[in-house]
Image (cartoon, rainbow over all chains, first blue to last red; front, side):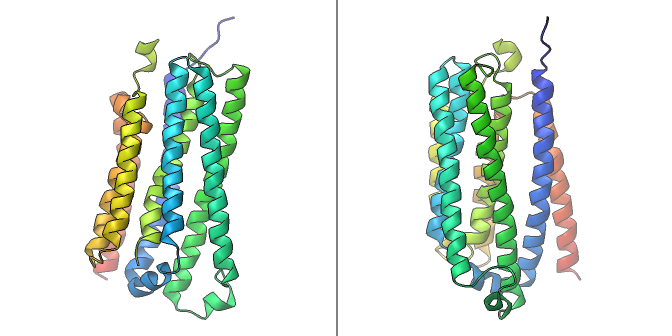
Length: 198
Length: 94
């Protein structure tokens, strides 16, 4: 039986899905920019409580994970299956490292009493409440995407091990890579907007 | 095979792009510390956009894709630009 594969169609489909993701986060960036324009001073004051170091570490982690993901696809296409398996595994580890770092960051804020609707936060000005609300929603939604990405790469890794993803059938791995890189692109904007406006 | 699936970058290209991304991250942190006032948001967004373009162009293979993909990508970007632009016309001139 002849297996039907539409390489180009699958890739176009993936890009169309990524466009909906761009517009999803784009809506949140729109809310952020309007409130920041209105509550300029308070956004700056609130951003001082975020750790630039933690944000910078996570930026480095995600950028490097994008590199290993790109290398995983390139390796598979050159027929280097083992190199691809190693690169995919490292990408998963980086994704988990990002989430662990995020966990410590969030729990630090929560211990200080800063979380949505907390008495400490409600005692502050509108701008700070909005800043931390957006911080939790936007980094939280991004974090969910990182979790989804890690799970997806895990599934692709098992496909690669089993052999249904290979040098001439790398379509699913490439589309997973596109998703992972988009998650990276979104973080590239989140980082300066939340951590670097002090 | 190669004809159908197109060309992609090599290891060397990817590592150079990664080094550029890390260098740009260091730059944006450094510039943010200089307190440039209202220019700091502008430089931060310009640097972020350069980084995003590098990821899209090389890691996401847009450089090697057919023109269709490049044109398609402009659609959500144009949509967002129009939405942001119209919103800020409202905010600034209200």
